[in-house]
Length: 151
Image (cartoon, rainbow, N blue to C red):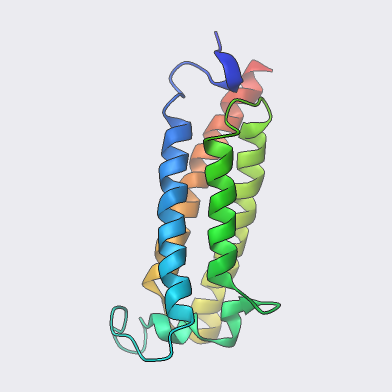
């Protein structure tokens, strides 16, 4: 038995969970964007050569076509938040959440690759965002699978 908006019994907590995670992603990305434009060295994430957010956040890899990665993250998380709240009643929302979260996960994994193999430096904010988008993708996958079973 399913309820309106493509929700199955027992999955009503998934949309709010995705919304909370998306909000957390917006916060993490906003802090990262703030530090991206910072002009002085910060110490909140300076744990030596292997953990330094300034190195990652101000590298040539911190933008795509002049747009900061953190701003792309903010926009992506805002889209996920929109889908999980305002647009949640639509039957296509689980699939849209899955596609959007997979795109975000792909971007985050690319940036993680850059951190590990190119910059050889980790950023706590980036790893936090990676964790958030992984969790959103898992929840969106579960939601989409449940929605497909009903179809």
